[in-house]
Image (tube, rainbow, N blue to C red; front, side, top):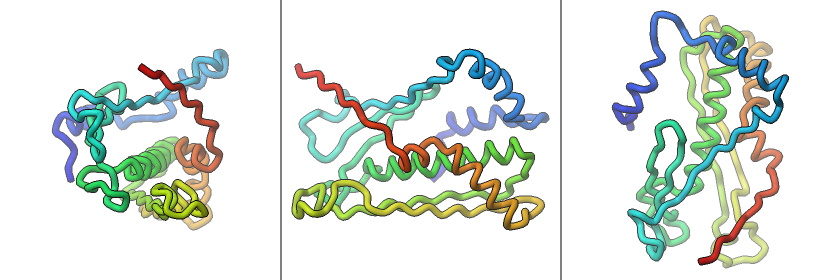
Length: 194
C-alpha cells in the first residue's frame, strides 16, 4: 500500500538540501516548556462521525484523526466478533498507533544522537481472546491479553550491541503510546445523552 500523493508530497516537502535537525527544532520548545510547563500539554484527538455511516449500521464506522491534515479512516468490526474485517478494526488502529509511535521515536532519537538509519520496520501484534468481548466466558478478560513488538533496524555504521540497546531503550522510554499502555491513565468517559 502506498501513501496518498497529497500525503507523500507533504512528507517530501521537508526533504531538502539541509537535513532536518530535531535538536534545532526542539530547542525552543524545551526552553518554553522549562519556563512554562503548562505549555507542554497537548491533546491528540480523534472522533467518529455518522455523516457517511449511519449510527444504526452495526459493523462499520468512520473515524477522523489528525489535526494538520485530517485522515478519514473507515472502520470495520473484526470478523471474530461478527464483522467483516474489510477495513481496519479498532485493534488494528491501536496496533498502528503503537507501531507508528515507536517508529517515530526511533527516528527522532536517531536524529538527536546523529545515528544514520538505513532500514526501519516496527511490527506490532496484539492478541485477544474474544470470548471476553462476546461475553461467552466471564473468566476471560475483555481486551488484548498479549502484545508483541518486532523492531527490525539497520544503521550505518553498524552499532555495537550495547550501543544499539541503549539507543532503542531511549526510544522506548520516549514512546508515548508504549509508555501509556504500560502505565495506563484512568479514562474518564463523559456521556451526553440526547
